[in-house]
Length: 123
Image (cartoon, rainbow, N blue to C red):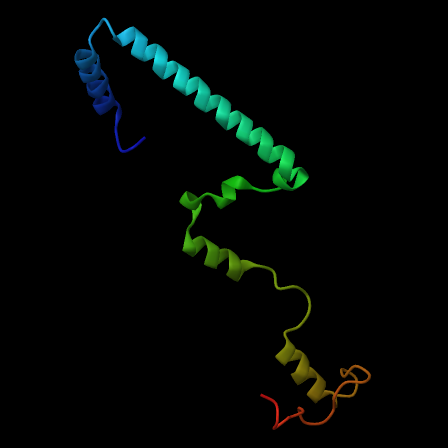
């Protein structure tokens, strides 16, 4: 909370009580409580409006995963490297396998068989 620990907060509250004085302290505490209530109402209404406007899409979002305090580049790289690539072979491996078998079996019908097209007038 703003870099203030419990002891410092207690000292600040004590200084505020001495500066404000015992006569005005109850009115200031009442005013502060009203501000906190209004802030709580604004937050509740904002959450309700976001839920109403976004609908089911907002319920599917994992807000905790988007917390910047959880951002760890090492974890992201580790998860990306550990992802299951799938059962299909990489393109180069598939090309090597096609070349080893003669290429006809792995080539789909209507595939380009000549060199790549080149247009010298293209920009």
